[in-house]
Image (cartoon, rainbow, N blue to C red; front, side, top):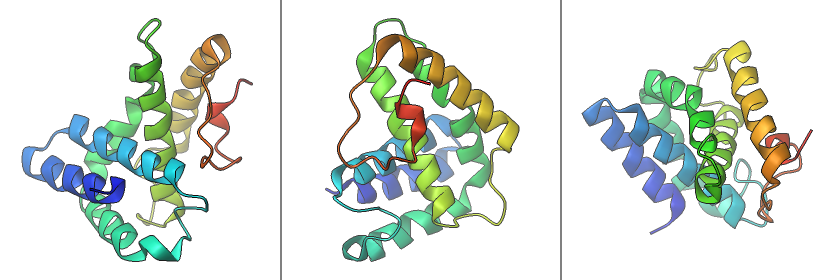
Length: 146
């Protein structure tokens, strides 16, 4: 199963269960899809149908995505848990991809709150310096120490 199919399924489940944790798993799956591609997920023609299905599902649960994005940094705060840090950074990438796709007329998470999430991630990234997957766009600076 592709990462985008998994993301759509998580978003649909989040809508049914009203769980932001499930929406956060969807963000991580979108990030994994980005990391797995040689080109940008936002523009890659080979995943256009899956991308549109994820975008549509995410648009329907904007409040859950807002709650999920607001807690991305909490995953990274687990001491010495590199897997949790990787999940947090992938989720942040997934959220950015959904923004870049124009999923919502206004971002679900206000810029101030997103900047706070990025600051928290930066502290952990500076300390632990995780590897950056090859497919992550250079503009996704939360993967790099400030």
